[in-house]
Length: 176
Image (tube, rainbow, N blue to C red; front, side, top):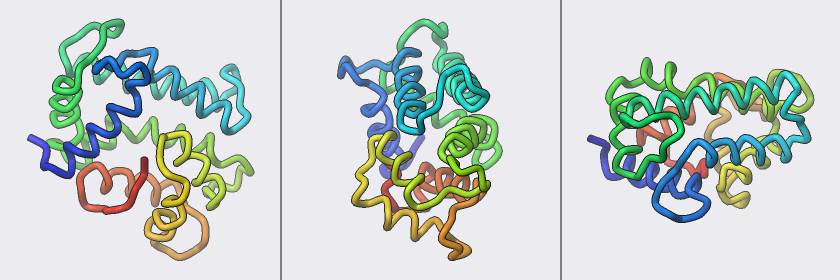
C-alpha cells in the first residue's frame, strides 16, 4: 500500500491525466499527453521520436490496464490506478520502476533533448514540467536538485532516477 506522500503524488498524476474530471482515466487521456508533448517540442507523431513516445506511453497504458484488470479500451478509476501503480512500481522498487516507467521517461527525455546533445537543458526541462502539468516557477528548483553532478544539464539517468525517487517519496521536489 502506498504511503501518504506516494498516494498524494499518484492522485495528482491521476488528476492531471483525467482531463474531463470524470474520476476515470483512459487510453485517450494518455494519448492526449503524447500530443501535448509533441506540440510543445515541435515534433510530429510520425517522426522517430514521436513514434517512440507514443509507443512508450501506450505500452505503459496497456500495462497499467492489465495490472488494473481491465481491457486496454476501458477506463480506470483512482483506486484501480493506485493499486496497479503500487503493484507495478512501488512494491517492486527500482526493478518495477525500470520495467514500468523507464521506457516512457526515456522517450520523453529523448523528445525534450531538442538539441541532440544527450542532455536536457534547464529550458527543455521547464517545457517538460509545464506540459506534465507542473508549475514552471518550481522547475528551476527541481532542476537544481536533480542536477546531482552540477553540470548545468540533466542526463537521462539523472532524470530517470529523480522521477523514481519522486514517486517513491524519496525526493521532495515538484515534478508536476
